[in-house]
Length: 379
Image (cartoon, rainbow, N blue to C red; front, side, top):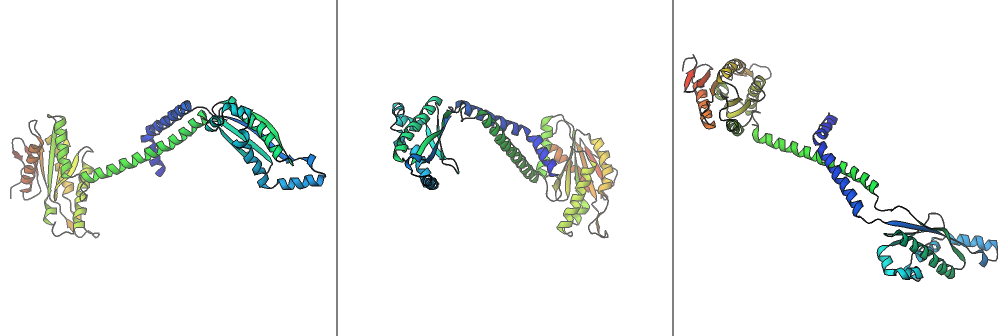
């Protein structure tokens, strides 16, 4: 069931997902186009014992054990990336130390569990990045080997330039943007559905009578006005029902039972009428029905039939020995083309009053001019 709800939400909000994905994709491509490319050059160096300064192989082995101390290899790492060391190189001085440090990033890392250091230089110009890497290597070799003669500091891999920029990466950025856009789009689609559901519930609260589950009087009047405003010559009929029997026992019945009976009558009306007909609670135990594009004669025939259903006793307890006789008195009018909403509603109320004046439940069709059709005797 929940899967079906999710699929329905996606069906209604698919365009939000597609739109956010396209926006994210275009943003990523535009960012990749406007961002200057960054290139990377790398070189590797190795630290090993200098056999020439040791008297025996045992001393060499001992120096290897000493080299395992992280402080030694980390010292080489700091010296390799120190501007005080490579700043003395002629090539570096030609390019300008401040310009290099402002535009290029120089990092050194120790390869885990080895005595190998990796130097990386990244920046906007590939040739300059390669030149800086080579210059740092030359200067570091000269400085470090002179400073620590007991160890050999040598080039393990010559400086190499990555042929393609490492940043930005348009394809990866586009793929990530599509993924993020899809997630954001789904979130927006579900959030929109949630907000729409909330608004729909709020709207229903404002137009649905909580007691009878029919529409409210205000909504009914507004719909009558809208029908007439859409077409001043439109045909429509109004039906007002006074549940005289329910009105008589309203003071004696508990509110819960009264509400239940009123809801039962509303359900009967909704079941017997068309989907576009509006059933509303008019006042207390009175209901009002709007039937668009329906002549009064047809409505009269319909409600003479429906009156039989509405007039059946409604049990108010589980055993069924206590019942309420709704005694529905029904007034019907058909709007003429010169009437406004207030006029036709007023005539419908008058028809209901005339129907309520009979001893037994009656159906009164009040035609224009005010002619009462019905054979029942007045009280």
